[in-house]
Length: 560
Image 1 (cartoon, rainbow, N blue to C red):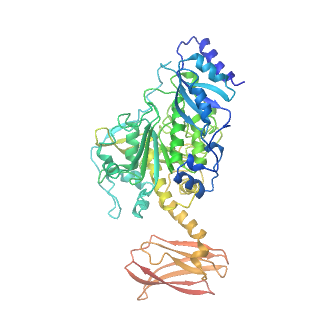
Image 2: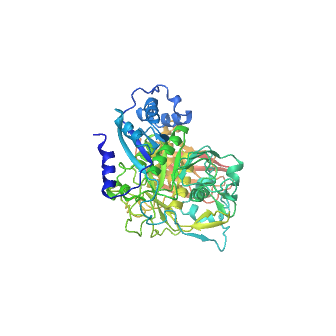
Image 3: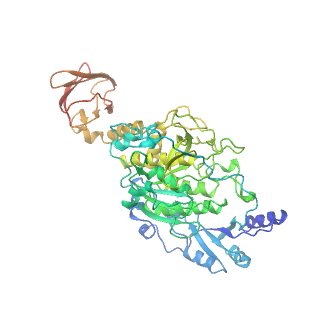
């Protein structure tokens, strides 16, 4: 049975009288028998940070984490003129390059091989339907340096794409990505080493690793510009012109996409890069790639394939999520085309697929439609992908259109949010982002749950954090202010002694009333109540008076 898939491809091409021979194949293995690696010693194949990420989220290390059995790979390598290009332990398969038909036949005869699946031919069978990186780029005629004077950054042209999500709220609270690891899987990062948008990133040694899975080399600086532009949306820092959504994270730049062609080998490259990111301990993957149709039509995906479980890329993305990472993927730019659905890996079950809107929140006509073929809400959310501020190849700041550009903007803000709440799991962070979105209760097939608001998401997670720690915060009390002293906002944790309406009133030292707030309370049900958007308060002491008609309490607060 294992030969049937391979023979089907050969017969198909002979029938079509197509002479091009395949050069790259994915070899799938049956098991991991005989591997020298064990589940009891994960440090042999996972970094300490990767292991810690699993432990923090109660994710068990399992057989999919084990490297591919070395003897299987040796047998493939020694079968003839064969080069192993990369591998996927999650999918238990390797990608090889060979024109040796005898070697391929021998590989296919091994008892531990399930299939030999072609993934690339040396020449294009048909002209591509369109340029896959043909996003519209525009010059900026009047560079903007307008931003709120209270903001941590002078965002310049980036302000609108940050502000639509209230992303500056995270930055102002000190969350810019410090200590977080972000991998970008794209088509190349042209001249990121010298372009001014990346001066801060390069000076601070924030790019920790690069690898080109297309050419099997370490450099990605000379390749396509698409990944560089996405990188600038995440990490760019030219005050007054361009500020990324996550400018202080550490980055891993992986080229998985060959911009000149389109073939399934790129999905295999994607899987290999995602596994590398996992093994290092990366937190978030941002990928502005998607696959539907290929240069050779026999490889084309159908809409039915967009079910999160069929394609190489989607299965790898789901594994990445299962290992505790957050994957943020572009929905696609096919909304106005015959194929108007999302591509893969945006169809993956547990990732964040991103659609595109303009800075006013109007959906872009090109943004691909959901749902996935199995009915998932796709895209999950939307960000600015019309007129997004990016770095050009000559260093000038321009704007671009595409879900490719909406995706890194969203990925960066999600990274900053997770930095603020590291004790939460990837799925809890994603849920908070979705819940904060503009049409969460009525999702549609263009923007999913809508446009996230990271101020709301932060408050939601902070409430959850307070409730999780309520007993520690309360100690022997039934009501407590948290934090105290405070600056712009504070919370009350209360375990009500009665079911009633509680009234909170804030007074300064002179007895001046600043506000009064009524809250419905249920006896012995712990609540966390946020007091934010306060009018500016002078430094000093204040009294918060509580009264529910039976119980009374005066709490001293200090404003720093």
